[in-house]
Length: 118
Image (cartoon, rainbow, N blue to C red):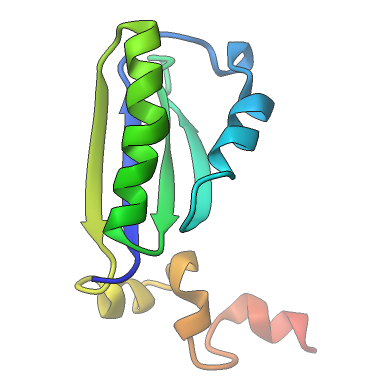
């Protein structure tokens, strides 16, 4: 399958400013295949999680098993994880100027790129 997007969310109510994200980021970066993580914090819910890209389903699953499941056991809360097939939606996403496919855009196809080179 190749690269995969992952959405993970803890069903807890912890304000994001109480999360030691610096230490967590350091642990996250140790996992193979992680290309990026965007932290998410629920509006009016204080749930938290992230949106990730991994180079493979196997590496994403290793991350889930190796870090997220372990934290779930520590806080005794629920975790929701969803995997998304990046390839099946690629053309549609490029058509919507998704920033997650910038490398696939033809040169000068985005307005902000035009301005960057003027």
